[in-house]
Image 1 (cartoon, rainbow, N blue to C red):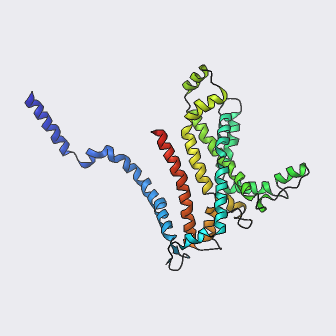
Image 2 (image 1 turned 90 degrees about the horizontal axis):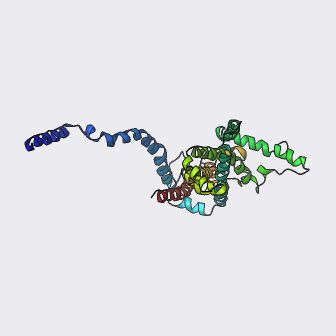
Image 3 (image 1 turned 135 degrees about the horizontal axis):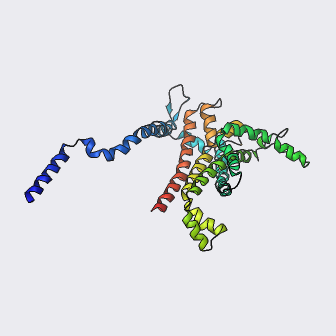
Length: 310
């Protein structure tokens, strides 16, 4: 028997040594082969431009002539640039007010997550802002705010008031654009929460009802913990959307009046690519600052998720 086992062991060892490298490691290599095209595209279109932007930020360059190395001069100029601080302040306002999309999206999702007659029509109406482009949203709200013939002007005139020129007033313009941006963002958060609500465990709902939970206690202690993945995605996407806001500003005000509605992304475009600038190095420095702000928020939320998973 021992000799028989010995022969079997030798045969098994011999079969393993005869396998090719692919046969011995295919379970380990197959996932990486599927990921390889995506990783290559990510490196080419995301990682490489990030390092290129950091490098260009140390140069004075108009995009045509030879670049001149100036060290940290672009960052030193940013430190004293009032337009940069106005853009940064507007980005913070965008970030704070844009977070309203999450609770409002959750509230609408809870309202739509029921089986009553006509609910599909209501869902379609709430989905609508999500599927139209930001350009269309900007145009719609620009017409809405029109102080001469817009719907807002009609409402003011109905009550005998004088409509404000929201997009022409430095005090209101940023808030008017953010209101336009919240429209599709609320729809996006609502879709995330509707998907999450479909995966809520009915056994836990039933058990909570038997224990007497209902209303806000049911929502806070039973439903919201199960919506944590949807909440995480909603927060990350909303933060990124607020910090890289560009389309609506370009369509509705082009940064005006007098640059009061600029954000960092639009100021970067004006400086580097518009008729005001062609200062690639200075624009890259703004992009690097915006990237670092995004990394702070994203790293914080990833760290929170990692701690919760532990």
